[in-house]
Image 1: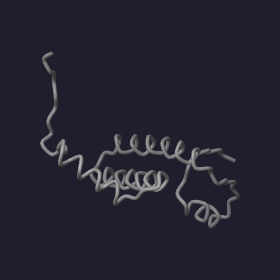
Image 2: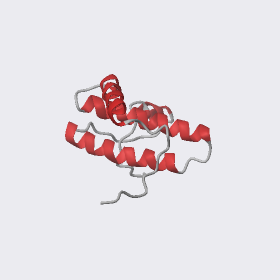
Image 3: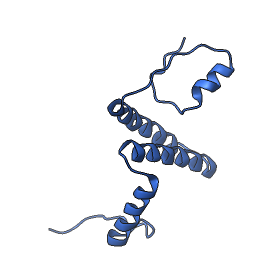
Image 4: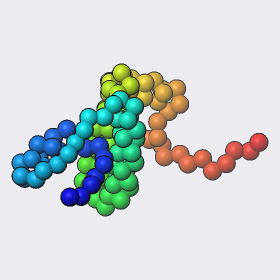
Length: 107
């Protein structure tokens, strides 16, 4: 039996069960959950980095957004609150639309 030891989406146990396979899961405590979300975020970011088409990239970005939503909720917030803070920061410091690459700053 393969051992995964990783955070999975909520419907994965039902999907596995529907195949007739046996499996083992457990529910994480909040601190461990956040640590596993961090690991999952790197996994999904790596998948985004290796995406070869726009469609694959968008799918991986959707996975990253799902993780950001889970992070926000784990910290007692919401995607709406994260978006509000993002907008405020963009107003003060800008976004990344202009594709500016800082080479150096003279001291």
